[in-house]
Length: 273
Ligand code: GLP
Image 1: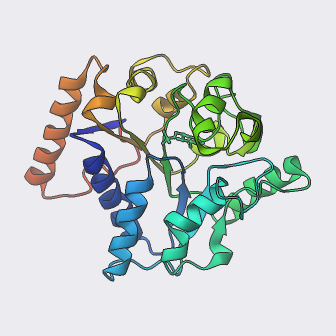
Image 2 (image 1 turned 90 degrees about the vertical axis):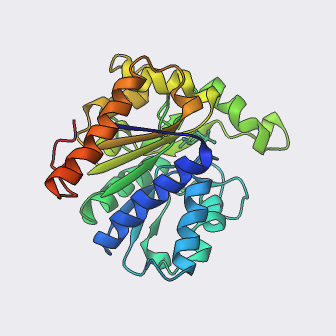
């Protein structure tokens, strides 16, 4: 894992936007895996700004979102499809045919999940997957206990997640209990992963993800097995890491060796470490 610690949320968003736009510029036909939640909102805002400034073209970009609530359609303001429209898709020149978000209203969610997997495969797989992290260590909606090799499927949301989501709904009864989520196996096959986290309330999940054991009890820990993962976090989210100084030294070392070799891609080999 390449762990980057920055000062605050704005810096996380800025660095994340640089990361994503660099990937988009070097591959105009990129297949992006996208996440929702409050964490990537700043990233999307900056991407839209860059697009408006003329620096980005989405015409050949394909996207696959991580997850969607079962029972919510695109018109529902709390659906992830709706979120994506408001924060990104409605503001850029992406072809609607190239947008993929699991369908919360699919009549056969299991069959739909299998089709979603096939669709990802037929696009050649995901080049760059953006991820947030839940307080219980989930990524996408893979709750603790999810198989590390799970595929896109219907999942039951954990009590902690339902509680965290309650603030977006008028009453507890309206909070969805189920979702369709890409699996940990699906996410693990993305060529690059970029996980973002900000704030003290994520510090424990971040510590377990980076420094704990690889276990289905902390779904994000599966990223320890991924060859090209960047974890971009602010000081507050990094506050419980025990090897912070080492991660900072690695960051400095990486910058130095890039300068020394003059090769920007010195760390872009298959194994990121
Ligand atoms: C939801 C999403 C996750 C997201 C998480 C954290 O559970 N399914 O993909 O990472 O929320 O959200 P936030 O960024 O708002 O803390």
